[in-house]
Image 1 (cartoon, rainbow, N blue to C red):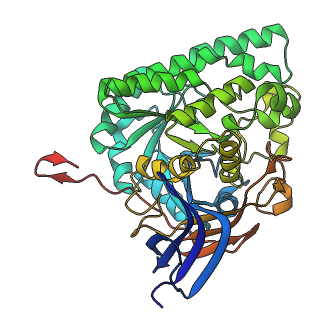
Image 2 (image 1 turned 120 degrees about the vertical axis):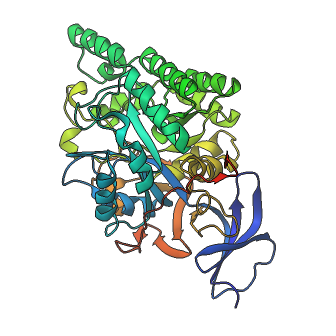
Image 3 (image 1 turned 90 degrees about the horizontal axis):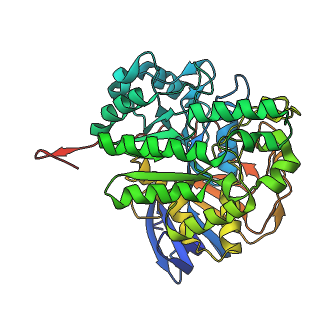
Length: 459
């Protein structure tokens, strides 16, 4: 038999959907995608109405934000169960800013033996060192760089002020990699936080009031204008506001590389229901916004203004998320296990074609991190990373699956019409239903294809 694995079902591609389509795999790579009677294979599954999508690439994961908490052993387990076959891990690890080639290598060596799915890495800079080590991190294999216009912590998550951001963008521009930036204006946020504290409001309302829309939008102009000035591809790593996507579109219209990422929580949760109910467990920066804004973001998905969708996953221990003083809680939520079914649910409910799932969860992230030579599509020659979803109702419960280091989730209790039934990494089944089959060490470090210079022209 010519093929190692053949799957038949509804194949979801970025530009079309193949009802009664099939995917055939040979030697860990996609070998053939077609319609009609599937060919024979050593392993062959006729999956009926099940959806088959390219394995998701989660562009924003924090595996090491809390010491001795999640680590790659758990983040990649959640990923495998959720149909995520590549995670791109953020450089803000508690006790270790990933800002040198040595730090990148340490993290690869640390993550490799634990990872159950493939992983890529972001790099950043130490504000005291500036852009000096950007070149060596590119050589070490980082897939992008991450900065912040807001200083969460001077050591672990520092603010990069405008002149330094400009210098970093200028250093990154020739490499062809993207500069991703956390978009909250430091001065504005600090002013609003002081106003909220002076008002005496400490409940669920405090967070949104401390970071109103203007704090995001001011930062986005800074980020995109810095990209325009330096010729560097500028990327906003999360935006909760429809207006932010309009700003990016205007820069693209003017010929600049300006993209925005939407996190799954901004497409799922709202302030007046979920933040009110969950308090600290729905505290995220930038904040979850009102339901009207959630629906506006789905329209931006349908209009093509969202470049990719991620989780910004972080599994804080429960004691870091349950302080009655809203502003005293850690920011961020876990989402790796449930991003794909949440996006599919949201798109179907709004009549948005599922082709957007293939594009925003796989194809565009692969392009974004220059991994598209091996990842991101059900295309012959690329890695056979596949997620299968069955039309089976389930109610999400993070504790029930056993795949999460924490038992809480802001998505607990949400009914999912489509459930991940299998995940394949390079043609090998790494999860079946909620059961993760991949052993630690199954995942590999993946790095971007180097930028090639051909006859004096960059390619």
